[in-house]
Length: 289
Image (cartoon, rainbow, N blue to C red; front, side, top):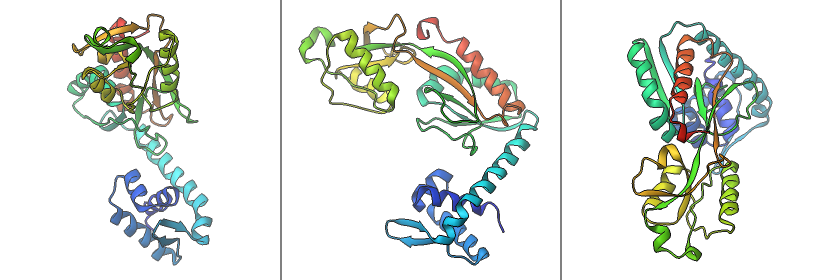
């Protein structure tokens, strides 16, 4: 039996659809279907009912899910252990939010790449949190407190925020007509929004909501409302001006470095982690608290 086929079985079982499993595994849906069918043929068992709404586990499939999950975890642990004993070469997968990766961490990582000729990077610049236990990434920078058990997390810093508007917006638009563009990506965004209401002493109309700061910045720079934005990003845009600066750091956002225990022994991963720590130390003081 091809043990790798179990990954496809587990992904379809958990996602419920071929398309969902394909996205998770980074494969096309025909490959996923072919691998599951190969597993069924080898086992001589029908594992899924193919329905118009998705793939539903049969009784035989349901019984195999916990067993397959344990085997998958053992295989992933085997791979992590093997990679952890490697010398400083090969590919290191780094998950980091797009804007922070580009503006704060990429320069330091580029220096490491220049000096370590045997290292390669795969940068996963996405707001989606990578699953380190499944080796979707080897090391991650997260703008939210890690809640997955079994991982090692180190707080790097707190990033400062301020309320911004396009230059001239507050003079041009009556205060009663100000609007606010919130970050609707997580619960921390809700906390930050409440902080804005507190400092303004009222709520603002909200007609634009986005799940990433760069989209919000684009709306505000075009003259639509106010937004709470990270200073490391918004201070660089000369179309914007600070309306309220969070001098006390009440709305700052924590930055965490996260790694799986098995991967921190890898020389390449350790070098990347050190580079990310040094990059944080070099962030200008006005951008962090």
